[in-house]
Image 1: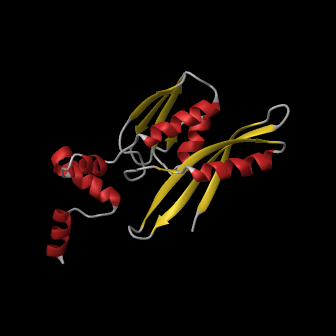
Image 2: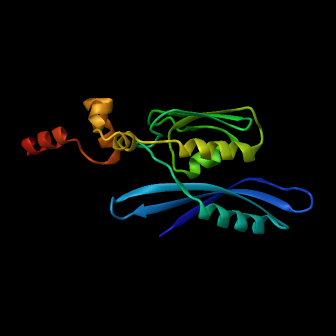
Image 3: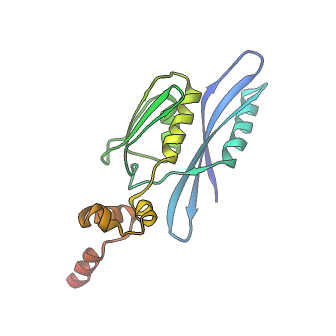
Length: 185
């Protein structure tokens, strides 16, 4: 079951309404029993705002990107320059919330990220800010993805303590904790 959410970032121009829509899909992955978040933006023009939103949603649904997460935040810091927009996304501790503004907030919330710090420099244009934010989200990789690329274990790359923290956030229990829990019972 696809659940699509839409957030209109900008609208209204003489000679036809333009609406930029951020579409997010919450798609349950039955094999892993976890929810993956997908997000993208669509920019379309029409005579009416509602028609522009519908067209924007269609465009956004075609090119959804997955957003890797560790718990309720992103796996690592990202700094990106796209055109004149400079974007910084930083992971935050649980309970921090979304510290962001404007168009970036719409993308981050649509992606399902709950704790993050963001900053945007260089442009006030919401279209460029949304494009830069999506490009930054595409650069995110989890420790497991990097370990797979390097043909290593996560423990070899980040150490046992941090690897156990990553496993807990993914919902899988570390082997040592599972063994200790079995001994107690």
